[in-house]
Length: 116
Length: 240
Image (cartoon, rainbow over all chains, first blue to last red; front, side, top):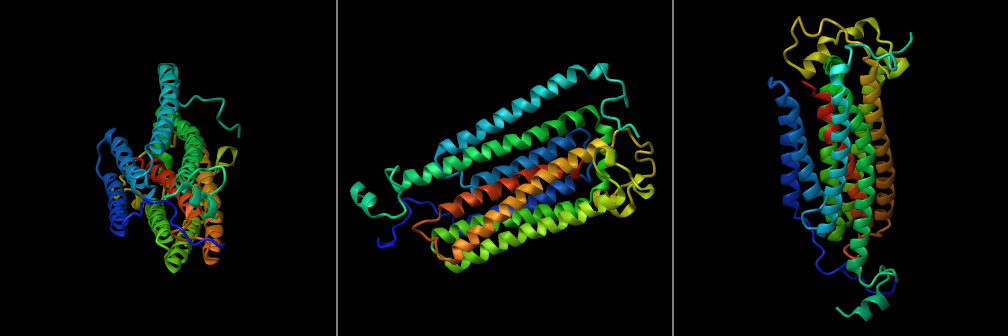
């Protein structure tokens, strides 16, 4: 290497250490919160709360650890589109599944019950 | 910044890119596209989870108690900490802090070993208790009722009338459990290989403020592994 070392490119964004640490602390706190939430009976809401906390944690990792906050916006577009398609996948499948819900016979599933 | 000077003298600029910035952004975008495929890969399993849990919640309510959520929680914290050290390692590479970079990469790698170690303990226990997938599901007699040790770790309020009847097709829960955590575990192993390679390159002094792209992109992959677990943990271990 004969050329002098040059910065990767002008305007390379370096995340401040304090930011990383605060995000880490928040993630730990949210993990504690999600475990604590299971000790409270909220019925169907428990799943919603668990997924909501997981989503907040995921947003923190995406925006700060994965740098989406300061990156070219298109990377975020790629990610959001992915989530959109995954959501379509799961929701449409569930819609289909729920349509047949009234026809289900409880405990009857010959295709998957092991023949032991 | 003169275009000609950059192009002629920068050894890190590939000829098919006009500037370093464009090159770095292209690399980043490429990595995000790959992560998109990984997310869609896991979404297939999440879809199976969602459909089966929607149709048979009793199986999940019964079977999840066999999982030790204390170990699961520790694993979550291990991965979160490893994401912290990984993001910190990228920062170290960007500012040319060589020693810190190596230490942080090694720490992240160590967290990977820690995660796999705990996973081994969990899997080993399931193997011994016969709590496996599909046809291999053959619970040992004690395994039918989750022991107080495991139950207390998940809920502090086990009551006498909790699920007296064992639902049918519990083997499917374990099929989903092993498929999801297994695929995730494979991704952890792959990530550890990448981390080892980055550590080797860092020790050779290949990274610094002039070039840190592999650390950056390898870090993105590792964060994805953490992201998947952030959802796996509550969905498998913390079912109410």
